[in-house]
Structures are given as structure tokens and as C-alpha cells.
Image 1 (cartoon, rainbow, N blue to C red):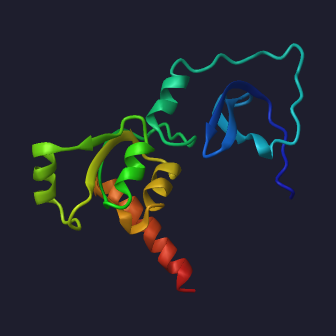
Image 2 (cartoon, rainbow, N blue to C red):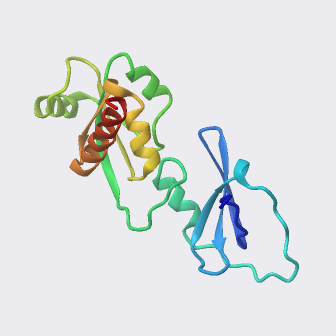
Amino acid sequence: SSGIRDVIVSPYLLKEYNSRWYLIGSADDTGVLLTFALDRIDAIITLPGYEFREEPANLFERYEDIIGVTYYEDAQICKILFWVSEKAAPYIETKPLHGSQIKIKGEHEVCIRSKYHVPYGGSFFSIECKENYELIRELCSFGGELKVLRPQFIVDSVKNRITEMCRTYSI
């Protein structure tokens, strides 16, 4: 099987993430929202007389709650707290991980620093978004320069990704 398939889609949105463009639309048969990388589409054919599916009411808002393009219906928005080393902090400050990113300062920073085991120095940030593949990949991309502090299920997802990486390198 070549993996090539024909899909009838009502297209709604073009979205860019990580220098790659995606088409988001509803499948004709199920109405499920699908995401297609534009560089993986072989051909687009318009279908005259095709009954266009109405876009979901919250289509644009849903992508404000995530990093990237992978959207899980059942995922909840959560406040993610993380520490970043002095080396990585300027990068994260000038290129936020998510639009909701806030740098934690003052008394709140002192309180957090006393509560969590983190290396000396660095900065604390928070973002509010839904867990998805791109979020965990982004958090892991900083290696030891970033440590997720809460919520625990995001900490666990990052630890699981690191464990998978260690397994890959131990083969």
C-alpha cells in the first residue's frame, strides 16, 4: 500500500506551524476535522455541486489553545509551570512557546523557587494550553535547560518522552 488515498474535504483554514503549512477541513463522510500537511497533498480537485459542510463554530478559537496543529477534542486547557535555565531564558522570553506565556517574577517567583527543586538561577514561566504532540515535543526540545514543574500529567508526558529517547539511544 502506497498510503495514497482520496478524501473529500470541506476546507476551512490554512495554518502555519514550524515553517510548514497545513490545511484543516471536515471529512465529507464523517464530519471529523482533519489536518493535512500541504507538502503531502498530491492533488486538489474541486467538485462542482459539492455540498460544503459548515465549519465548526469554535474553529479559530480552538487553535489558540494549542501549540501546533494537533487538536484533541477531550484535552483540557491547563496551566503549565516550567523553569528555564539562564542560558535558555532569553530565547524563551523573546520567542514565547505559546501566546499565553507569562514570566513569573517577584514574590510569586520566590514562593515557587522554595517549593520546587530546580537548579540555581534561571526563570519561571507559565503557559495555558492543551496537551498535544507538539507541546511535549517543544518542551523536550530544550533538554536540561527546561524543567516542567506542573501539572503532573504534563511532567509525566515529558518524562515518558525522555524515557523513550533513552531507550532509542541504548539500542
